[in-house]
Length: 113
Length: 114
Image 1 (cartoon, one colour):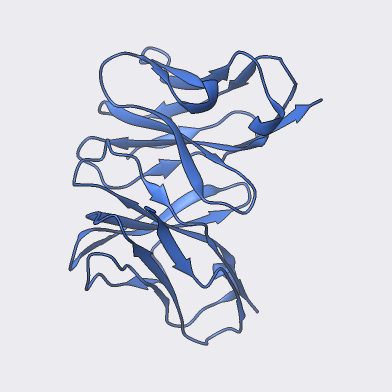
Image 2 (cartoon, helix red, strand yellow; image 1 turned 90 degrees about the vertical axis):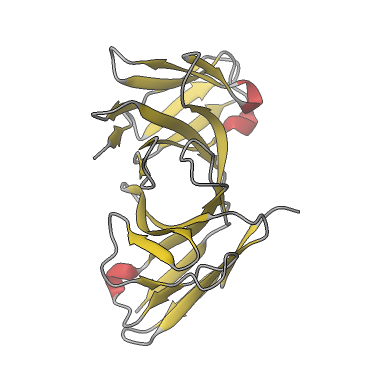
């Protein structure tokens, strides 16, 4: 089975500062990795995904993530935080023959003006 | 508009009273899934369905039932709800059999079991 660990349940950054949200995964086979964002009272929206190919993945709203197999990581970054980035972020993993998805416990991002 | 629709959005009920949360998608997606979201635990998969009449257990299926009689609908049934099933529930759908496709989520159903 696969699993995901998100370090830091709460992260605060100043507006304009770098955003770094950490995700480590466990999988015995090549994983498919996803980052989702959840705004208050809404469902989850896909930010970006890694399946195969280029390990640096760009997503919506200026976010990107890099798949590092040697570190079993898929950290999410954004160069400059905006107030509208305040939300809950979830990392998720599955495999190419899998239909079960495993989500991390989430990281709540606060952006300070 | 492509969407996943859940009903009801909010429900307060009592222990043991059977309830059904409906989920419908208009994207002709083959794959559908139910999750529950609890503080500090993230989202956990309850059941999923690869297509009509094909369902399977996720990580936390105890106390839940599902059915997939039509492609667009995937109701979640709590036959005898208990307080530990108080949670925020999400339905999601995905195109095709390939798990590299992203899931589309509904807006959630908040259940309170007293």
